[in-house]
Image (tube, rainbow, N blue to C red; front, side, top):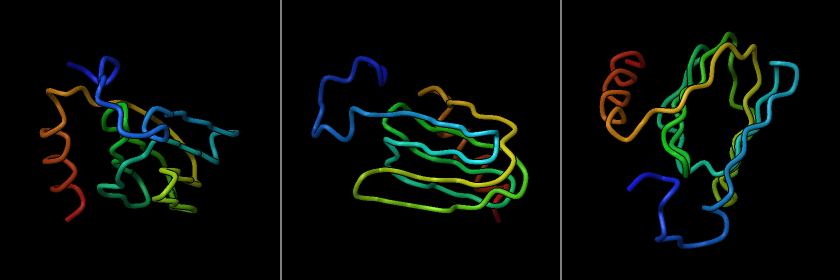
Length: 100
């Protein structure tokens, strides 16, 4: 079962996931479950749709609302990519080495 077919929905907040980029400088993401790791060049977020990797330059966590699952990141955004179910552990391992 993948994230799109998940029928075990606990609350309304978990259903909503969106990514809004404004001028490649401001990024707002909803549906965030956890911020796994981050630095000024990369973020690894667990969202309701899977792990999301954000890469860029001078990235800063501007807002983290854990109750609503909203994260706001400021900086120059280069790349956003989702990690599939099979690749999640590999991504976590990669980022744990990167963020030491």
